Length: 363
Image (cartoon, rainbow, N blue to C red; front, side):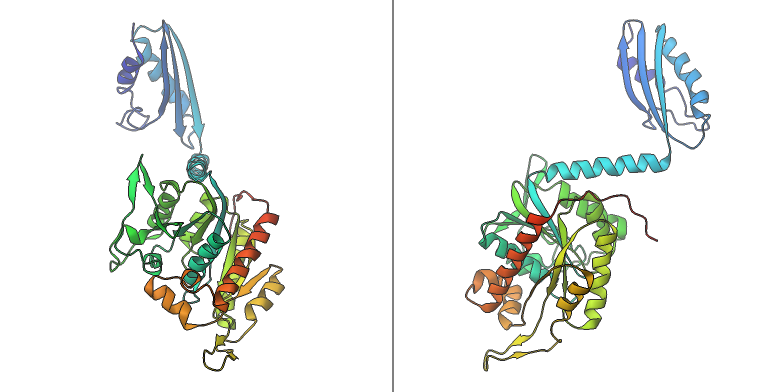
């Protein structure tokens, strides 16, 4: 009596209508079963031609009967390209969410433009949350400019793998993953959008993050492929928008805020970075980039103002030398501000209900 393998081999002689290639190599045969004189088959087609099933059924049944089967249960499922794409995306999202099933809160740190200190905020926020007793991971999703290896003193190190998963590196108890660990630091990443999306997806799905209270995701500036990939592939707890006080930065930051609102990601609040310079000599505060712009913008947008971080040399030095200021100089006023910001985020996520990203259309 013929077997499943015999049926598959026989179906390799059945071409897809209008093509010389067979239906097996096209990947259309999804299920084959053989039991006595009965053969059960399921085919799935992506097509807009409603007559394909009628054209395909006779040669498939004829080929199977030639093997000696007298009863054939053939199911042919037709899907549109849009439906097939939606199913594929849903499957990828499910796989990503499964790999992050032990991560309680997933927070994206974003800005509308570069140069506002988003990565600095991400790093020090991660260690502030760790100081508050939380289990934290930090993902560097800035594919074009992965700076976290330098900022964490982890340059030149590479993660190991186990059970087909990448094991993230650690810095003082915070788990870290970055493309910078997988490519030379002086190599330019010249990728088009789809490759950026795939790289981020892999760092989410193929990294063993383990059990975490928070995964902090440091996004690149702007509102492009990286931001949309994260928003589509993950059920984000929320996004934190980082800006400096001046209007030119806030204008772009608010565009980023509205992007997250458009894709149904809650905005946890706004952070004002480089907010006033604390003079180490006289102790006075100087408004180099202005002051209070982010607070006012948060009020206008109806979101929480999470805090302001001053300009001090220790923050810059900490980022350049791989010694984040929250770890290196916990006595500083700036560190107290980071801790307060972390506490505000804890309060926000405690009040947030995770919202599944819906299908969205830009208008």
